[in-house]
Structure formats: structure tokens, C-alpha cells
Length: 299
Length: 330
Figure (cartoon, each protein chain N blue to C red):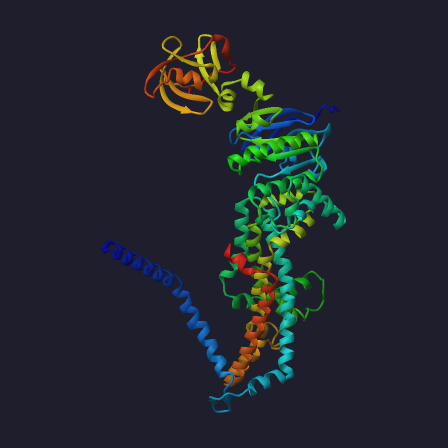
């Protein structure tokens, strides 16, 4: 009898300890997510229904903020312009990122060389994105390095104007900033592909191109999906690059939102934030539907 | 052009930056035969196989397949097909698409290639699993699919890299029989890399023992077992005792040795293993050399010995086989 109760007590204590350990493992991350993500989201969700005027905001439950936002042609224009940038940046970083990853993983044989080249890709990211963005200005400017080189080489007699403060300079910056975000997950997926599969495909008579198309692309699609999510969300959430590199000619969803915040119009800003979150959510869900990203993360 | 041989290696060398994996080996493999490359790990047997397959660049020498020099040809043009050690099935393709892959890349129409792939899945008794993904199959089933994928290109030579090493012992013997049957039915040459002498003995028409990038001996299993060329070969294929006598270094089959009260070599019994039809007695001789005797069960139980006791290991001089190289005790 006594031993049985002792055993029960021990089992009970063991269960409690296991429960505690689980919570200690999950706890910190959960706390960060709750405090810094869930709570603010909830907050601006609530505020988005509030009423406001020039002097303050008033608790209420009105849909005016959403109605105003969704019926203004400017909103649709901005979403369209941002999506145009996002799709272009996505397509270009995808091609670049895929081929750089392919080169690094399958064509570089020495592990040391591969490491050095990976570092060469990653080292620029040790400085801030803002600095790397601004660094393009003296390069692409009217009297910048690139125009000077072109003129010295007599390739053009007048400086090219479209290089800076244009859609072009915005795209150049996006590609520079985000290609690594695309490349890294793809390279990660590719590194997990068994090299024997490539040999087996070659044994079956597949050409290089067929190996890429039939073996490597299907097997790195989770990396492609992860990279796509990263690039899309970065461009859609961008505010600094568009503002700085377009010379104020283009706006983004977030830059419009920040204008409202600067004007202390919190409820409409909150409403456009909610719409943006939903928009990005749908986009990511769409990508996840095509490719099961969790499968990749679990491996 | 010599069509008696399916594969000929002419002083083939594989050199890596700072080492030689295969050192100028020459080998002829007769038409439609089963050849086993046997050796300890790092002996160059896998490099040799991969050079025949075209997956490893040949540093020097030539590889001929059915009389044609294929040294600079890609795998598919050589008439070889390889079955990889871990099977290397494409994980995102179903069994039938795996088998049809070589036809897909050649541009064969979908219905045609699927029909043909199904025939080959049927050959390895995997037709019922055509629409499964490799991850849904057991190791043995995956292997059959890999075999079908290799055979569908109708190779002159099938290359198998340790095909049985991942299987459990029961399945290993079963698959072994099937491989041999398949080789005979298809009448093509199989080259099978293994480190197991049992496997090589059971399968091979031609058994090639390699060590340190060299071929130490090549011949039928019986030739190798009865007349091992060197101490290394005798030790590696097993079943032999090596003795240093005044007649030179000799190998004596363990089943030709017996235990007696006097004469021969005095030795202490170390272990006794009952193996059903026979009993294996491990001994240590006075000079500290390991030896063993395999005794028929009736002979052993007529005069059983206990570990720790001293006996004399005896054999008749007619069973001695003189070895070429110097025997170094280990």
C-alpha cells in the first residue's frame, strides 16, 4: 500500500517536472510574441474602429475608417504600385538567388571556397540596410561614380537621369538588399538534396538543364517559397527605400501609413495597418498552400 | 575489338590531389557474367565502380565496354546503369515516374513510358506500388524500384554499389538469390561492389579482391578459396589459417585442421562456437598467433574441448597451400 502511494507521488512529481520543463522551453518565445506582437496587433485592431478628429481620438465602434480607406482611389493606387515593385523584386531576386544558390551548392566543389563565397554574400549585411541604401546615392547620382565612368568612357555625353530617384534606383536597392534573403533559404534546401540524386539523374541521361528542372527545382521548392515570403513581406512592408530612392516620386503602403501617423490620425492609420496585415496574411497563406513550408522547417 | 569481354579496364588510375585511390589496375570481365569487387573499405573498389559508371573522372588509362572505348563518354552513352547504395530514388516522384525518368528526359510520350516503366516494375514485383512515393516503401521495396530504374535503360552492364548492405540478414540472402537469377535471365553483366566475402562467394562468377588501390587476386570464388595468392587474400576471404613453416608461408583451410593430443602446433583453446553442422574452435598458438579449426559436429562431440585447455592443432602437409608474399603475423 505504502509503496504504491509513494510510486504514485513520484510519478506525479515527474509529470509536474515535465510540464514545467515544457513551459520553460516555450515560455520566453511565447512571452515575446504575446507582448511584442499579439498585444500591439490587438491594440491597433481596437483603435482602427475608433472615431477621431483634429484634436483627439475617441473610443467608438465605427467602420468609417475602413470605408474611407477602401473607397479612396489613392489606396488602390498605392497597393498596386507596391505590388508592382514586390512582383518585380520577387522575380529578379528569385532568378538571381536561385542561380547563385545553384552555383554555390552544386558547382563549387571545395567546402572552403563555398564558405568564403557564402561569407562574401553575407558580409555586406553586417552594416545596416539604411547605410547600404544610401550608399547607392553617390554611385547612381547625376554626378555620381557610374555616370562619371560612362562619360569618361564616352559611352554617353550627358549624365543618365533615370539612374537615381526613379523606379530604377528603387529596384536596384531592393535587389541588392533582398537577394540574400531569397538565396539563403534556397541554398539551404539545395544543400539538403542528396548528391547521389544528381548522379542518378545523370545516370538516367538527364542533361544539366533537365536535372535543374526535374530534380533541383522540385526539391528546393520549400526554400523558394520561404525566400518568396521573405522578399514579398520585406518589399510590401518597406517604407525607407521607396521614400529615399524614388526621391519622393513613389509612395508605398507603409509610407502612406506613416504620413497618417505623423498627422496623428491614429484610427485610420490603424485601419490601414489591419488591412495590410490581412493582405500580407492572404499572400503568405497563398504561398503556403502551394508549398508546405512547415515540412521544410521541421527537417 | 574483342567481344568476349563486356568490360575491360586498361591500367586505370584514379588520382586525387594528394593520394592514389586506384593504381593502374587492369581487369577483364567476360560477357554476361557476375563480377564482385571485394575488399576492405578504402581499397578503391567503389572508385573503380564509379569510373566504370562515368561518375568519376579517370585520371589515366582506358575503360572499354563491349569493345568500345568509353573513357570520355557520359554515363548514358556507355551502356551502363548504376544502382546506388542508398538507392537514390527521386523522393518527389512516384515509383513509376522514377522508373520512367530516363524515358521522360529522352522525350518519350507519357503513355508509352509509363507502360514500359510498369513492365519493369512488374519484373521486380513492384507493379502494385507504382503510384507510391519512395518514402512510403520499405528499404527492400525501394531497392527493387531502384533496380527497375537502372534496368529500364537496358544497360549492357549493371553496376551495383553495396546493394545488400542496408538490408537485414534474412532479406539479404533472398535478394542475393534474386540478383543472381535476374543476371542470368537478362544475360547482362553485373558488377557488384561489396565488402562481404560471403556475398561475393555466393554470387560471383569472377571475384576480384582489392587492397590499397591494387587488385590482389582475380578469379572464380573456388580458385580464390583453394589457392589464395597472398596472406592478405587468405585472411580477407576467411576460412584459412596462416602458418610460417620451414617450407615458407602457407595457408591451410580451417576445415582441414583438427585437434590432437600431440604433434602439429601446440595451442590453447580460446573459444568454442557451436554452429549447427560444425563447431568452430578458436585457438592461440604458443607463438601467440590466432588460429582456428572448423570441426564437423560429430568429430567435435566425440572428443569435446573446453576453453582454456591445451591441444595440438594438426593438418596434413597435402592441405598446405604455399603463399607468394611474406606472411606477417598480426
